[in-house]
Length: 72
Image (cartoon, rainbow, N blue to C red; front, side, top):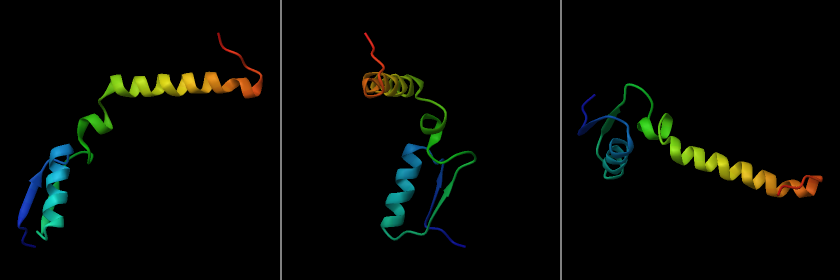
């Protein structure tokens, strides 16, 4: 097969580039050796994931009053 564009790396920039090229009608190949989305989506961004988990725990604790659980 012949491609108009081959994008190497499926991280945020590569994925976006391949998507835009495809929408523009280009025959596009996205080559990624691991997981689409890159390190941040699949393995990294620990601080934001920790914050989201903490918010989920807080929401559960605050909502616990419905079940007879109070938090001070």
